[in-house]
Length: 296
Image (cartoon, rainbow, N blue to C red; front, side, top):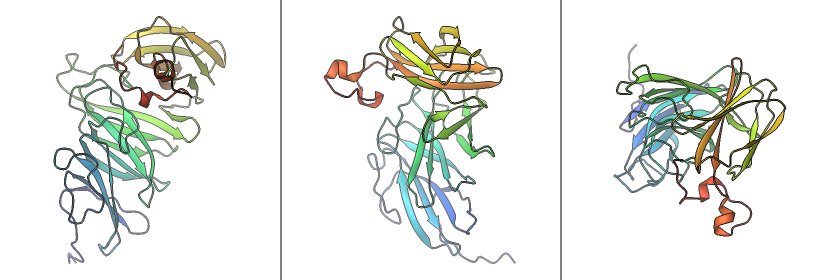
C-alpha cells in the first residue's frame, strides 16, 4: 500500500478529475511554450496566460494536450466533468474576443467557462458578466442533474451584468461567493434558466426596438444597464412583444424576465447595426463592431 505506481506530471497542475475510463485530465495555468506543451501560446509568450489541458491514461502516459484562451491573460482555476462527458474549464480572463473566447468582458477581469469534449474539441464558452474590480479571479463550474450548470465565483461586484443581488458589503470592498445557474442548448443558447421556457430577443444589436419571443404572459421584464441600473420595466402580455428602446443610450443591456421563481436574462446591444455604419451586409454581429462604446 502507498506504492507510487507512476509519477509523470507537468508542473503547476491545479486540478485532476478522472473519467469513467480511468483517464485523468490535468488543468494547468501556463504562460510558456515548448517542453511537453504541443500547442503554441495564443497570446504573447510569458506576458499572457492560457488554459492548458492534458489528458493522460491510467498509466500516466499523455494522450493529448490542448491550449485554450484569447490574446489577453487567461488563468485556469478549476476543472470538472459532466455526466454528458464534457470537461468544464473555469478560470479568470482578461482577454477580448479572440482565440477561443467569443464574448467580450464587461469588467476588466471576469470568470470564463469553457466546455470541451473528450478529444479536446471546444463545445461552447461563456463569460460570466458582472461589474467587479479585479476580484473575479477564482471560480468553479459544475454540471447539475437537470443538464444545466452552476458557476461559483469569488467577487466584490454589486448589482450589474448577470448579478441581481448586491454585495453583502455595500461598499464592495469585501468579497462574497456568488453562484449563477444557467442552461445551454444548441438552438437557443444560454439562459440562467430556472424552469423558464427559453425566450429569444431580436434583432441584436438593435437601434430602435427589440422583440421578445417565447415569453410567458404575466411575466415582468426589467432592462438594466451594465451597472445594474434599471432603465425600463414593463409587464409581458403576450408570447411575443415589441419594446421601444430608441431612448436608450448606445451600449450593452440585460433584459431580465421574471415569473415567480422562474428567471431568464438576455443580453443585447443598443446601437446601430454595423452595416449602417460600415456598409456591410448582412448585419454583422456585435463582435465585429470594435469601435462602439461599451458603456451607455
